[in-house]
Image (cartoon, rainbow, N blue to C red):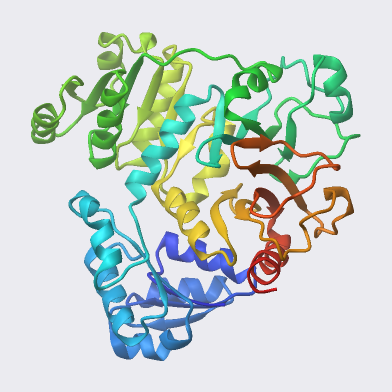
Length: 454
């Protein structure tokens, strides 16, 4: 598979890194020599210095042989023009573009159905708001993925020091709780991803990923001593485009919302555009202001300014002042491993949300959705099993999946099945597969060749 990436910023760099590890044929284009040199020095991909919207550069990159073009520069206009030019030269190439301006929101279908025929427009601000909404809906979760139209949740939670499952083997959980144990797909311990077996023990401090049907999620969370507290009051620090989108969504869900914004002109705009949210002019990291606004009474504080240091400081301050749940916007990927160390476990990134969305559109086979786990160490994919596949019609325990792969869910019409070794995949089932990074190329081959062509 040949993929051309226009844009060598953080999104382009991380997607290139991800795909290079899977031995994809990747070409990265950017006008900035320093950005191109950084990619070339750190990732085994071809690089070209030039404009990704230039037909000469795209032809040099091999656009006519490329299956996918990803336009992910910081300029919406450059991304759109790159797709337009690619469409003229190679109409069969699948095109994905990152577009952030809200003015394009209503035209996504137009861009797909008419020139430049962009298959998918991805707005990272929309995606990060969806991520925040999922985190708010699942208490204690640091990561939430949705599959089967939301009927299946893939949730990551940290085990507290006092959790009753600390030191318990997976094989002993069912007996301990008096019912079937949740399907635990992965454990992150000391930054290492582990696919646990029955004899493995859970430990306090582990980041545990489990799968659950939506209607059983609250019961599953209770197994890990996580209990639901309804969200009724939210404070947003930062009234930029993401803050505005978030406030709009909270208003629609009848959640009492306050926004603190430093720019007085932006405050006026927010007050005019929002119906119920309280808009306050001030610094979200000002302890006196937060105290005056009774921050300790807020169920959630979401820090969404454009300055990540301010977001980190404001979240830490909010926790110190009695807020139990904070969600912090981070831009630099290098900060992510540090967040849990300083007590900020719920972290979001527009760039990371965009990358997760892009992944589902570049996978081979009938992949309906995909989510990257722990900086790309693993991935969860939802795919369709076709009648011709050799994974259909026999128990899972008799199928030779690659090492590091686990089938975590089977969706059959309106039924959601959390599988065991005896479960059998039937034609047209939607299957949810958890795979470590090194196993993804083989899973892709199964999904593409076995399911689509044989």
